[in-house]
Length: 112
Length: 113
Image (cartoon, rainbow over all chains, first blue to last red; front, side):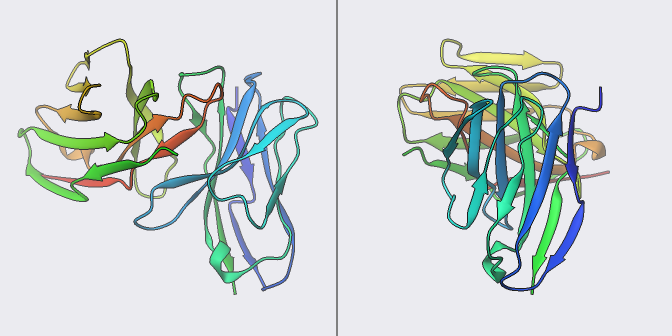
């Protein structure tokens, strides 16, 4: 099992550009989520999904879109990148409630 | 919504000492409290978790205690080793019917040989 795989690992965007961060898991987990990690602020939930076709907003959803067409994939779209979106992004998957969240290796995004 | 506070932000100990990290949460409905370890440049990884029907849980040198009345939980690491050096995050699940974790701001633990 590869676990949770994120691509790319690093990305530099110009303000106003759009892009998609990819996340895939091969553990057949129902729950998937996206977090951003900023210095001194821990991890904050952006969007999450409880199964294919079902998504909802987390703490900091503005400027991001998600969709879940399959159990395996949960891409995160930045619609119009802003410097405030410079961060490290982690995707995670969880088999069920109150169990371990497995994180991807992260994507370090810089918006200039 | 849930709010999780974590202290201290940095903790320096000598090898072999014990380390304690404390977290408080605001929502009494929260019922799941994991702890994650993150080494520099790596992904967070679960080291231990506790559910609200349990007061304490141990796994070798690591233990977590939960006080539901006071709404706080703590991570205890005994006989610390240099490889314990990392950032540790506590979290609380918002108990909304979906897995929604709210994380503390992290504690940087440095274990000196």
